Image 1 (cartoon, helix red, strand yellow):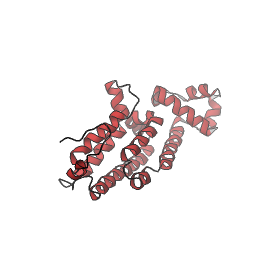
Image 2 (cartoon, helix red, strand yellow):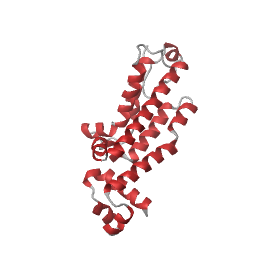
Image 3 (cartoon, rainbow, N blue to C red):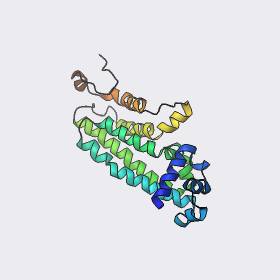
Image 4 (cartoon, one colour):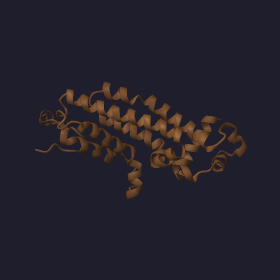
Amino acid sequence: MKKKIIQKAIELFNERGYFDVRMRDISAALEVSVGSLTYHFRSKEALMDSIYRYMLKTLEELAISDRLFQKKGEELEVAAVYMSYMQQFRFFFQDTLDIIRTYPKIGERHRQQVAEEINIIKNLLYTQVGKGTLVAEPAPGLYDTLAEVIWHTLHFWFARQAILGDTNPGWDDAIKTIGHLVYPYISEERKAEGLEIIPGIEVLE
């Protein structure tokens, strides 16, 4: 029953936004009493805590880090997998700031998760330098900053869509945006290979 409650809550949160859904809305959608719902989750905070744990478990099962470093040339495809994960829990990525302000314990865990994600991106960039795909860091700390900007682009893509009124559900624009961020640092040797480096982006002569 707990899993069923979590799945229904996520569905409603994605449709209406986290703060516009009450426990009674979830119980009504499940066709159970509020008492039955609070038997499993005594409060909305307890429910959100379980949902966040479920989010982390889902992300862990996707093995993003392993796929990035073990499958050569599939970095952007892995980014698309991550964004599909975000789509599954889009309410959280649209309302991140308000949620972590409301629930400080979730906020602390999320900050740790964010640090791990940024570190993965940093390591990936430096790995690409070692492979000759990217140039050596032009200035100290530049790739650290680039890693954070890439993370910002991914994490806040849904908020960006909402603000701009973009209803396109696809990830092509997001992937191309990441490609634009990385493109200036692709090595001349890699460009000279004449292969498509980033989907939808032609190599400039």
